[in-house]
Amino acid sequence: MTTQISISLWIFLLLIAITVWAILDRVLLPGVRWFLRRRINRVIDEIKPIVARARARVERLRSDARYRDDSGVLHYAGTESFGSGPFQENGMGQGLGLCETIAGH
Image 1 (cartoon, one colour):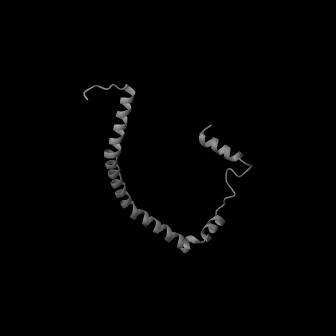
Image 2: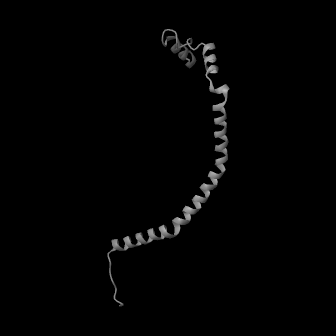
Image 3: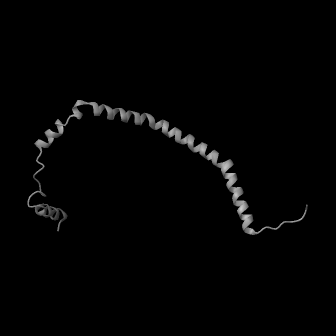
């Protein structure tokens, strides 16, 4: 029973790697998971009321008659002149001239 057994180096390293993996898997990783889960749950608990208030604001805006109909958008579109401007005349000619003036060339 006291005889020595010799094994190759790669088998020894494989046994060491399996042992380290088992120690990490059974002892250290559950503790790390518990720690991270606890911290993440705290963050989620802090964020929940903020998200709930934001959702409530969005729902109030969606149901508000002032924002629900398109009359404000149509009124703005009717009063503003979207059809004129530096890029509208002769394609892009005047717009490019304006860009060159601004750039100083």
